[in-house]
Structure formats: structure tokens, C-alpha cells
Length: 421
Ligand code: PGA
Ligand code: ZN
Image (cartoon, rainbow, N blue to C red; front, side):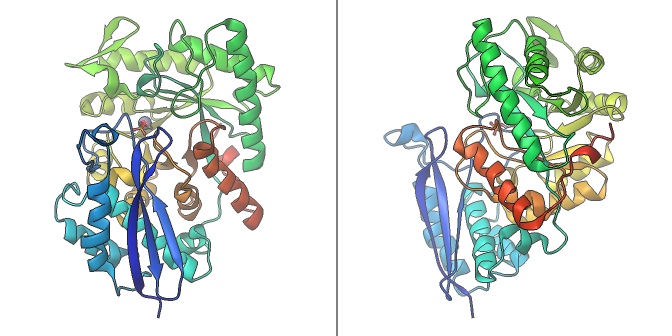
């Protein structure tokens, strides 16, 4: 029998140098699963609670020793002796143990770390890679990577309001060719930024963080870099934005480029950008509390743009279901630590897919070497993955894992099919 024989946690560091929790689940047959939980910077208000110690004498209050202790005592005691193969029942034990709507008692970081480590231990015990264990023979498409090559907003100290400017290499036959194009364009962009004297330092997700006149200058630079690297914008490479609009929204207005805009003005702006650039996707185009604005955005642009809900849905099946009912967005960004367990994450994904919403597995700005999202993407046949720039090991770890999966499975690339262009 391969029941859970040990569960233990430790405090490790994430890519920003902040502490986070790593959990190991050991089975009686010696199999082990290990998971590290990431951490966001532009978090949605309704995300499950990331518990931190608040003890200013350690890591400026950001320590996670309480979480480590919760895993090593309460969670460990509840899971010892359980079989790891029924993920839904493991997760329901965890949810009951916590008992709060947002995992405030144990911490979503404690619960997710335990939840993922059990799934990984189960897959190790069966001798299957995680994507096979979770997806069976159904999961075999490789996602289009959304490569965040210019960083702004909460991820950089520059003046760009939009948080992420992404390359979408959809027009290729394979994931590896798409990734190569992304890398080549990234390096061309670097030369361009150096030539322009605007700074080629990088932000939290590995993209450059230049000081530019405005957001459209970033898009112009991307267009130039794509062409200079020898690729065709609008045929091979498209563009995507994560506006993260909640970050510049207050009292019903969006403060952009020194102007105060309402939702309608901002939607006009996106429509204008659509006419000028091969833009296929806008994430968090409006603030998470501006549901009326979101409805208008969806009505106006759903046929022309992928409208991705991140902060507004926070990977929460209940909030997503409200969004579907009200005609909000047409794609779901999936961050397992926004909701805090694998089962609830899968529920949100299946709900989205059942309603024809695209799904995009996503990293956080504070990441680690953990590659779970690469496996999840393939397991659930998500059409896209967002893991930052094609640089910095915590970002490329996910892309590299997808290269391995591509080699192992000859899985087809989602690319040319997703945006019907
Ligand atoms: P975060 O941002 O990980 O800093 O919350 C990522 C995103 O908004 O997609
Ligand atoms: Zn986002």
C-alpha cells in the first residue's frame, strides 16, 4: 500500500528573494512529491489568503514559519495514512480542516503546497509524469506561450502603466519553434532598447523594464523587434497585453498617461490598438470591481479579442460562474494559488472550458523552480501558458519542461488554431 507516510514543509526563497513554502509528501513505498508555492505582487482582492508571519524581525514580516508549522502538524496529522490517488477527497479533507471561505486559518499557501505535493507523490508512485497522471491519455496538446518581454505596472519601477507586453508566437508548427522565435525576438529587443538609450534592465518576470513615453511606444518597439528578428507580425507573432487595470483604477476612473478615463474611453483605446497592432489578447483590461465596465468590454470586443479574467475571477469557480452568467470575459487565467487547491483549480478550468472560455495556466511574479503549471497545462489541454520572458530560470523552467514533454509525446502545438486568424 502506498499511503501517505510523511508530510513536511520548509521555508525556501522565491525569485524575488522572499520566503515561501515548500512541501514534501512521502508515501510508504518511498515515492515523494515536492511542491513550492509561488507568490503574486498585483494580487486580486478576492484571492485565497497567503499567510505570512508578520514578524518584522524575520524577512521583514514575510516569513512563512506559521505555514510550515500548519503543514507539519495539523495538515500532516490529517493526511497520514490516507491514500494519495483520490485528489478530490484529499482536497476536501484540507478544505474541511481549514473551514474558512478563503483558507485564512491554515493559509492558502499551506493548503496548496500540501494538495500539489500529494498529487505529485501519487504520480511518482505510479511512475507517470504529472501531466499523464492528471490528464491520462486525453492531455496531449502543447500550449502557446505568452512571453512577457516588457514589464511595467507593479512588476517594474519604470513609468509604464500596463503591466505586461507579451509576444504570442502562435503561427508555428511546434512549441519549440515558437519558443525559439520568442527568444530571438527578446534578444533583438534588447539591442533595440540599448540603441534607444531607454534602459535594458529587467523586471520581475524577466521582461525589460524601459522608461518609455507611453504604452504604445512599447508596442511599437515590439513590432520593430519582431520584424528585425526576421518574423512576420500578424502571421507568426501576435501581441497580448496584461493591463492589470485595477492597479490604476480609483473612484470609477482609470488614470492613464495623466488622463482620467472611464471604462468606455479605455475600451475605445483598446479598439484603436486593435486596428494598429496584431493584438489578440487583453488581460484585466478593466478593474476587478468594475463589472459593468467588463460587461461593456465583452459586448463590444468579444469577437475580436481574447478577454482574459485574472484579478476579476481569481481562479474561483463561484466567481467565474457569476462571470459566465453575466457575460464577462471569454478566457480564464488560471493561478492555482489564487484559489489554493488542485481540485478547485481543475473545477474552474473545466467550468471555463465547458463554456467555451480559453484557459491559460499562469505563473506568479514571485516564482520558483517548480514546474507544476507546465504539466497542468498539458493535462487539461489549456490553449496557452503564461510564464514570463524566455529568460531567468524560474520562468524558463516551465518552458523547458514543455520542451521535454514535446519530445516525449510528439504532442501537437495548439498554435495556429487558437485565434482563428
Ligand atoms: P502577479 O501578477 O503574479 O504579480 O499577481 C501576474 C499577473 O497579473 O498576471
Ligand atoms: Zn494578470
